[in-house]
Image (cartoon, rainbow, N blue to C red; front, side, top):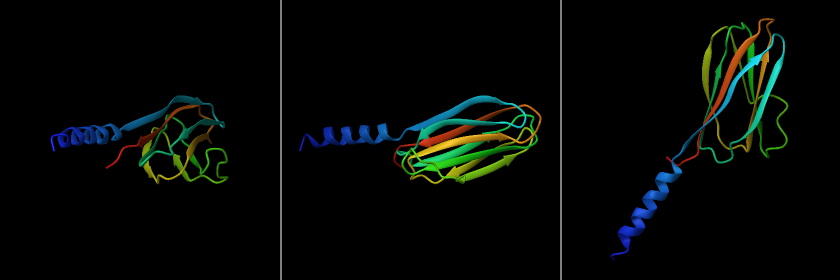
Length: 127
């Protein structure tokens, strides 16, 4: 009976170690007028919760697209999520967990150069 508190303490420590919030930002990127930028591929296979945040600079017409992949190799031909932002706008959207990987593509549809930031905010722990 004296071993029970030791096991409970180890179980509590394990649970606390799994409740991790991981921020995977794509650094601010300069996107020239009428061009696109593709980010790295992010492994989200262990994610419980995902939030996609987009931050736009001075351009009046920027598309932020999030592409999903069930295997981490082949990505969908149509975006899982597509957001269009005007000048100096920011938006955050929840993303359903359960896929292997996500890829971010930013397309500047304006002739004005801009600086954008995208973030995948991923929680891998338990509730």
